[in-house]
Length: 509
View (cartoon, rainbow, N blue to C red):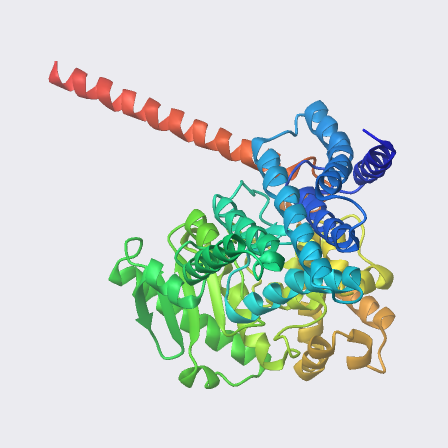
């Protein structure tokens, strides 16, 4: 290793060491691999565009950076029992192909003779990193995204289980086809061999992009409907479901449940239910969470792509518990911002919790009132800030925002909340009342709430639940817990089979 190698190794070592203080990025898993992929692509693109190093030296230098980066993460993972083969797979399929892609873009721009090649390469890579994301989010209901620059986004952050996705192998194969095509492109006019390489790569890429939906790399609604296979229509809903999981009587009951919730929610929010008569809400019901994870990227997390259209995505096992909550998100699109929601995640989720009061078997007022300390105006301001919802554990943020929003809906005109929801600004919407006065009013409501020992125990459990950012290596832990639950269920089934076998033998005797 020469001096440049050591300098980049030291820089990577510094990045990796600093990452140990940042939740999730300190884990040897997809988050750190995604960030390393992003850095690798832009570093390789910029350096290749400048042309100061030969290709082999460029790759060795970036490899030095990555080795220094991954070393502290790997040591931390091994010493804390957080190492996983999934994490290793994300690191192998992330930074290395991204580095090759960035280098190919930079080299092609440099050899084209265009001025400011480093700047242009950076802009191209920035477009490759952002434009496909925007296009997919505005076109498909999926939450997972593959990308040539930063590799992979698996879905909602609340889904702790993120195994290595086999589709990432396919997508990285497409990345390598782009690398080959870009590498041969500058010389194609002077060599028939390079023209053949470009032509072959172009045909292969065309074949790949025509099959993105078939391979599950994108998830248009047509694919979801085809995979689930059954449709049931009501006055305001088109319910798409797995026919093998639900019989006609069950889907009829579920349809009535949809209509009942919609009627109550639109009544509470004073919005027009008839808008859904012509443009029905599409409700996707998946047979189980693993099917939903494969098709949409969201496993345990139910969701509504409010930026896209009126639709819900729920696994059958979660339906009774979350259907009303998700339908609130759908209805709130009528008074949301241009993305169909609010800039304040606290207002988005607080509204859904407020209109779904029976989710925890106790009211949100009871659970918050039973906690040791009630949030003050300063803490509520943080909770309802654009990113403040994720500063606490999910349970705490949902309960507090739900209780506060429930109080606002009960004591002030609903139109004031709609304004706050659309603008993301509580104080402006409820002026001349400020957040301090609204908080005091809410506290008086909590003081009048009766709680018992059972509610206090439940409240303590919920408020002490650590957030995703507070858990040690949550991705690896989630997979181990799933494996343990599977082993326990298998052992239980085996025990039951043995008991039944013994009883059968005894009966024969």
